[in-house]
Image 1 (cartoon, rainbow over the protein chains, first blue to last red):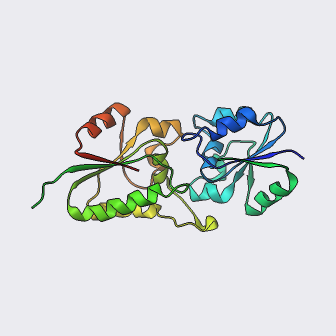
Image 2 (cartoon, chains in turn blue, cyan):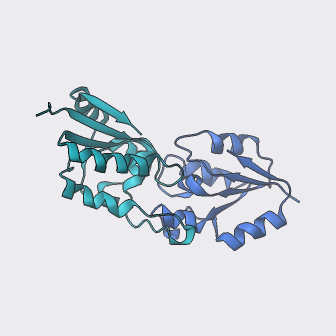
Image 3 (tube, rainbow over the protein chains, first blue to last red):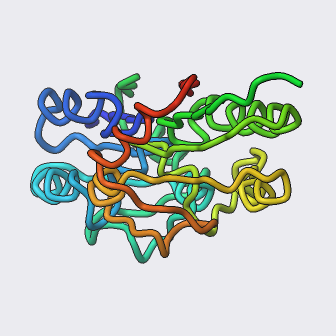
Length: 102
Length: 121
């Protein structure tokens, strides 16, 4: 099974996402949740980074955390896949190990 | 009568990942009772605090963003947002829940230099 990387920090405030992308093996998956969702949005200084990473990783974003922050699915970068809490659980069962980038 | 001071609350954190934003808002509301010259600045991820349409229902967290609209009732109406922080995040003043004055970094620096106290959150 492939690794699931989880990123819950804003890319503007911490380097969690940058380190994750630098060190994550190709084909591993990345879930953006909590303040990590800000990386999933179009039109930011990090949008291009995510677009590039989509070539080698499946990237997911947790929808309840998007909504809590006033963001909608329409603003998410094309190719980033939306998941709800049940989808989050599914990802944890279809990936191993799970690595949290705090 | 006490002396009126110029107080600036500097908000630099995203709203829900940490408690800073909500605590800052509480402090501003309580502090408004002391009739000081209050300003709020939103910089870096702090601009996300003012994003419209926050809906926390599915997360079970409190949505405190409507409270920013009540600040005017407490005579807190000097709200400043840094243009560079908005631009980095693909946001504009129209995305925000309250009317604000958008300032450049240089303009915000000048405003900060006029304050008696700056509170960081």
